[in-house]
Length: 358
Image (cartoon, rainbow, N blue to C red; front, side):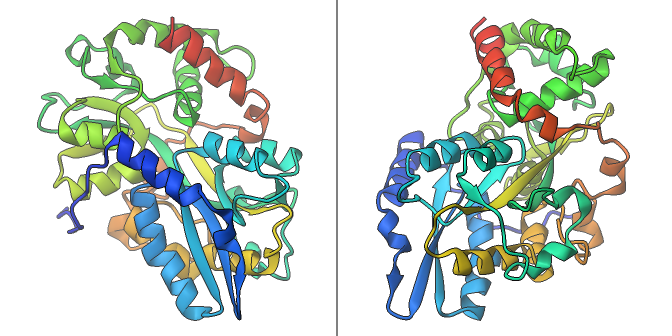
């Protein structure tokens, strides 16, 4: 399949990224009303996600709603969103925030997010089951899956299995940024391979990761794992399929994402209304647009996420590269993210202490 042409990636240094994040988060007053225009702040993932979401969701929304402007605050992960919102409850740092489904319930319980008004967000009725919120909080915005990534110019034998990560030929070439949701998803996948129930005991999966640790080149590639694989700093890694597919295009096929033969784990990012925002109506109008069929199709075609809106039909060539493909759907490892919510922090802490720091 020919690769679609995309604009070249700019390799951002860690220092530059930190400066961008600091500048973007410096003044929540950017979300203040200005005359007849309401400006809302959206806190979302940095890098390629920000670029494509701005182009295919925010700009069309602003064109259709000239009385509302959207300021994008880039963040690195859900833990950062949680920390920023906890520190700004009296004066919220954002109006709308992206957060993965394993962390969002914690924010809901702490009162950081608010329930949506179905009358203001009518597209909730069009969502696929896995993207629906049972309690009325923020719905899913994207569907993705865990993947193995490798550099096609540095790795002679392509990986096909999670077990390949332990091969001697990959030793010293591994990038494993797993002190987050990627590690939690990997524990689930390894538990399935090992024939254990992750809800009963994750010790076998932790022990398996401990065996891998001596062969890991870096646990925290900078600025991110996808750039590390593209540059050759790492030969093989664990990451998310959507970004892997995006980097496959922008790297001219140097980066290659792989669906392991044992299967993978689906992950959901939710889009949430921040509690106590004085701009709740405009914020919910934006959320409604983001989960609507038009925005979902445009964004997912560009960024390789599976749509949460059931009325969206991706082009066949894109669909086959997302978690919506028949192949991926047939290789999904069941996971109860709502159950994992209360164990998430403990699991990540065990990865940090027993695997990375062991």
